[in-house]
Image 1 (cartoon, rainbow, N blue to C red):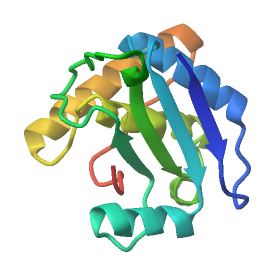
Image 2: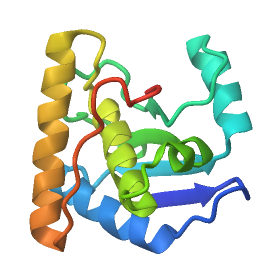
Image 3: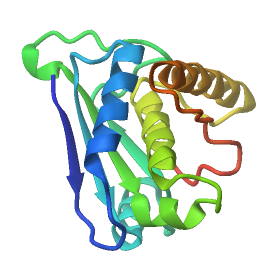
Length: 167
């Protein structure tokens, strides 16, 4: 099904083609390529607004995920009853926030891929509210990013504890 990437900000240039290419591979690795997925790139002002409304946190953040199937347990696949239910949900990337969090030796486009992968794991029921949940999510992200690296030649690492601002 479709992957829609929308850039609703003008602060940070976005190269959608490389992001699309990598996320399509991530979707195949996770086995969810038959599901629709939306990725929306926004600036600090808008991600902060969304974060305030939905998480009661009045700060910008890196990623917010809004699952279509809300009650999945970590790693469960949605079981759609109808064709319109083949939807994972939407991931909002705070691209301005992500850009400013990048270290000098990090490639911004790689960090976008890692952050979108983190958001995608949230859409599949993974969370990081406890140490055990964080470990489970970290291991899933690591496995996915390792496989992505095997397929593309990149070496990406999951978001580390304390570095993810939201989700």
